[in-house]
Length: 187
Image (cartoon, rainbow, N blue to C red; front, top):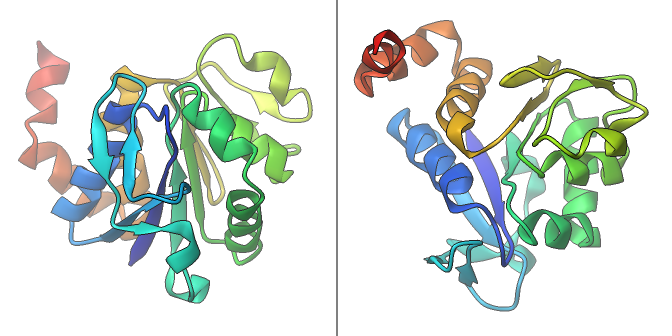
């Protein structure tokens, strides 16, 4: 398994890095990919992250099993407005690979034209963007190969759903045990 997590200036740090951390804990290869000309990408809260590679270095899209779009502003709009990102999302979706987005990130999926008639969610206030989709106010929504989530506090649930989708229910449950998720839910 190999997943792209796109990073653009203004990305929501907790949404991107929680997914990267938890997927890597389950031995899923993750490439953090900058869409800028630099591997240094500054998040929405001024945390600078060094991406694994730049988007121009993606030379074998067939080696990827999916893509994750974090939210954050203006990170999500920067991703939405990048034609290279849109083309990659379309191609992976056409091959029924994972396409996941959280918070404001689903606006990128809307721009790519891949969520028409699909069940989706997002950060509150973006509902009008998804007029051609079935908008659901749930923490995490999965419709086929597309997973969406609402925001930063749900980054853990979002990551668990991605792992469950990629590796099966047992691995999602295993991660929940590893990170003491059940203790959080009982608190």
